[in-house]
Amino acid sequence: MFEGVYTAVITPFKNGKIDENSYEKIIDMQIANNVNGIVPCGTTGESSTLSLEEHEYVIELAIKRAKNKVKIIAGSGSNSTNDAVRLTMHAKTSGADGALVITPYYNKPTQEGLYRHFKTIAENVDIPIVLYNVPGRTGVNMLPETVAKLSEIPNIVAIKEASGDIAQVSEIIRLCGKKINVISGDDGLFFPILALGGRGVISVLANIMPSAMVKLYEAFENRDFETARNLQLELLPIIKAMFIETNPIPVKTAAALMGLCEFEIRLPLCNLKKENYNSLVKVLEQYNLIKK
Image (cartoon, rainbow, N blue to C red; front, top):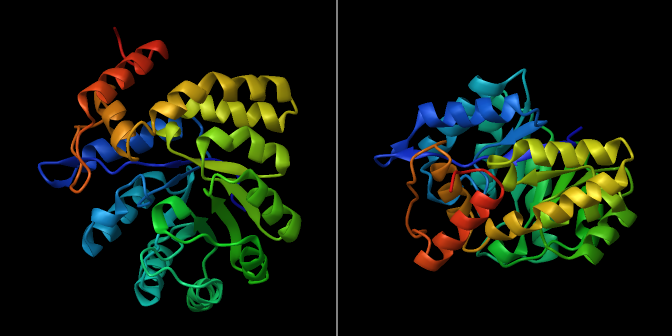
């Protein structure tokens, strides 16, 4: 159901509020560059600093701007199962094509707790659900065996796998087969995960280089593996730059330098260190994203 390049879009702010004009410009850019879909209110969208009202508003804005042009997978996770159900229901009633649901953070649930969390959401909201495993941000790793159990639930259709563990990705694909699509949650592993049988990426880099990520995916789908591989290698320096500090600080800085939005980020995130800012500028210049 969900495959190809999905952009984990940033949430632009201006004077402390959602910058609707910049958000629409960002979404239009994504559509013009032929991404398959947009993921609002994920990690890159600073969902953890949005109020409930802002979260719902950003989802609605994305759907209004992009619906029927590209698919929308709305971020709707929480470390409270009840809140995740509520946010996922809002995604459904607003018209999203699917919901991206992160593993509960801070609670550190057991594997059984993870299973029950996602099962409860899936049973309460009839919308295609994409599991989201990113242990580096949440403190809990959802094991392949748990993913395999969840893949038996009809409306759990995919997983965004961002553990960074290629062996774990392989095991998920081995255990689940075609029951769910495995989507890379790590731009640096996009090609390797495609090679294992993955079906796409939810990308940070696509905020500023959507066409490059689309080109890589299309080359792979056309079985031009050498081109796809070379593109992955060519993009590695800028992928690395996107994580020179905590995501989404670098990508939001880059977007601001490119004129896509103001640079405004919410505490506890803050500006790049000077040396990292200078390094980022050099990389953006090398990729002709900004002028020297």
